[in-house]
Amino acid sequence: MKSDKQTTFEENNIIKLDTITQQELEEKEEEEKKKNLKQVALNFIRIRDDYYKIVYRPDKSGKLYKDLLKLSKTTITDDYTKAILKHIRKFDDFTLVASHTNYQQSINGFYNQYHEVTHIPIQGDCENIFHILKHIFGESHFEFILDYLQILYTNPNQCLPIILVESEEKNTGKTTFSNLLYWIFQFNAMKLGNSDLHSDFSGFWLQRLLLIVDETSLEKQGVMQMLKRLSTETGKVISNEKNKAQREVDFIGKFIMLSNDAGKALPIERGDPRWAVFKAPTFAEKGYKDDPQISSKIQAEIPAFLHFLINRTLVYPLKSRMYFAPEVYRTAQLMLYYENSISMVAHAIKQLVRDTFNMFPDETELQFSITNIMDELKGNIRFLEKEKVRKALDNELQIKQSEKKGRYDFLSLSGAERGMLSRIESNSITYLFSRESYS
Image (cartoon, rainbow, N blue to C red; front, side):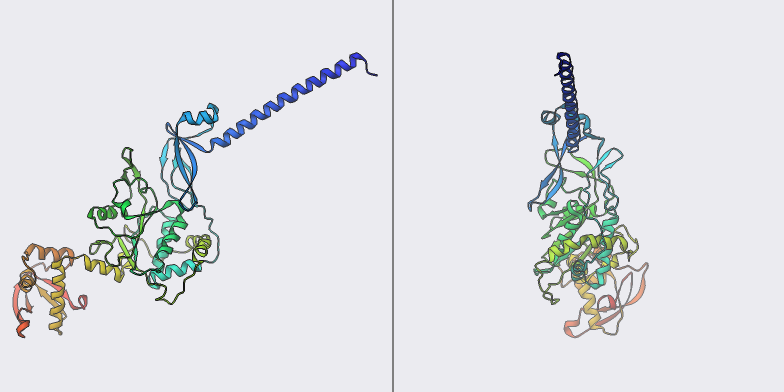
């Protein structure tokens, strides 16, 4: 039997042990709260004096994308107490540094607004992606589009041509191509409508890498000038957002345009090197059948395609501010735009030259002075002005004028309706036209 003294000693020890256990438990709970608070704090950032919550917002298809939701300091402390504030990461400001091969969220104390691409390149098969690229761009421009995409992925700050893919028919793969780009670059790509480009508020798309414009039909000259300026921009631009002050932002965007209005979607000026225009054939023309699984197949091949891009050697060297030499992406469809963009006077001059070569089949070159051209066209164009003819020759047709006066034979069609062709010996400053350019 235990003595009263022994019992009292054991009871005291039990009470002491219980007290220690409770204290340790409270300390553990407090430590756990701190850990949880630190973990919760990772969902927030502070940029200068403003607080943001990192959220994953669902798009219309339910896919989640990373976004920043501005919150007040009071809202955060009400939800998580003031203790959370010391754990929230602090940044001096926002920045935009695009990289797919060495991505960094924090750079020298600045928060990078460029989205990290989640694909992990891995060797594998990407035949379906090759197939769609060859279908749209053809064998002749397959290496061009591979170089284009390789540069876009490995050197996103490099200026590149504006790509326009068009066809009047449906079922050509245009949408599949645009989806491929969207799937590769994820939320660094954005699909826009014509109204977005016409809008005064551009802030929501100015900091994306890839701007995909569907059903392109832009008539305002101001929008075309904006596209041309942005396509060669290497610095900062003014961002306009609703209910916000204007601010300067970095612009790294590349434009991809799709249109069903083949040959007429845009007023592309003759000789403008910013544009690469391709007409996509239908799958039926190529004898291909629809593949209802093509989207899932292409998405599955993206890691292999990226592995292919980062390990291949570029075919074309750096030659211009749009990287490529213009002849690399010159197509018949682009030349059609050049042809359609010239004035009525320029069209009339070209037709005059063609008709003259047809009527004088042995001639390989023709020479005309501005006065000769005005004499030949005066019955076709009312109120023809000398300055309009000069502008059409110099700027639109880009025909070089002789440096000084010289003797030449002026071949005239003015009497052709009466069956009379004239060869008139003349002496003037002239413009030279070669047959091979007008065949």
